[in-house]
Length: 204
Length: 204
Image 1 (cartoon, each protein chain N blue to C red):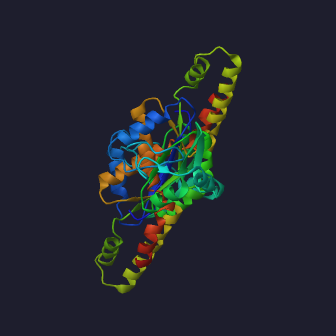
Image 2 (tube, rainbow over the protein chains, first blue to last red):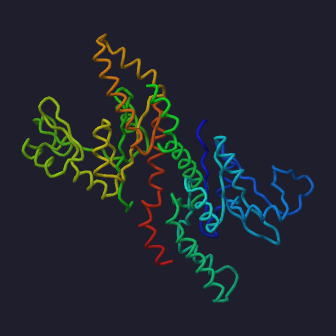
Image 3 (cartoon, rainbow over the protein chains, first blue to last red):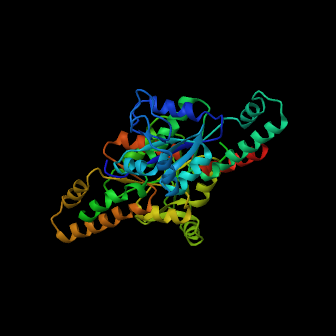
């Protein structure tokens, strides 16, 4: 493969099953996606390796990358930063490999600003009523909390319009199959392969 | 299916194998495309049925449809018109069915003007040298004829940039598989399904 790989971004509302679908895709046959290795400011644990489990950086270095726009997306969790370094993603794409990211909708929109030619796939629930009842019945009767969750969920679902594809997660293996077809098809897009043909066309 | 079907246009340079691939797609399992019924001015033959084999029309009626922009594409062959009526295609799409057209590159570009949201798939040879030698060795030594054929072929190949997808016809069953994946993926495009979700989103 000589052309640039695809950045594939899988996202969708909380509770839709993004993680399960992403795991099933990586466990499935015939995928050649590159795991996106995250960067973190937390301590390296025994057995972990730099550039394999994470890119381990100091808080200062991480914040420098944020400041200079070199993080594709990032979040702070329990006092440490976690994020996707832009240079690493670009180098992997330039080597011709696809990079697969599974992230929250807010992060996905930031990625779209930096990599507009990525393939943005929105995972939807088969039934919005079910998603609603899952949100409402998540172990609390506090109406304010439920209202806040519904507000967030509505905003997340409303983000669908900014994506390229909407895939229903009715069954995990069906969703995986659809996503893999989308990724293969995207490799056939003329604007992605025209450079490869332009040389041939000149010699024709 | 409540949303509008897709108009799928398969085209490519002469000699690339469009007809063979189209036939293999229609013979394959799990396709629900509608054959595009052509309109013609030629006489109905014994056993043929109006609206099944062709829409049979007089020369005057056909030319009226051309004049009023109601032919998606058309050509004259041995003194008779053959073409694809726009209203029929639109009605079939509105009923939720996909319509599959296999036509020459010039016709495909006319279709694109009238149905810009169609899915335009360009079938390419696996090897441009082979296409070239097939054109050069097509039973003539007349350099002027060969030059003219090469000119036409170059123009046809150059049309690729106006298409959505480029599919290599290295093996018919592989090309069929790729095209079917493209068509399925196109059904998941957000701009095609967002109307279906908008009602759900409002009620969510």
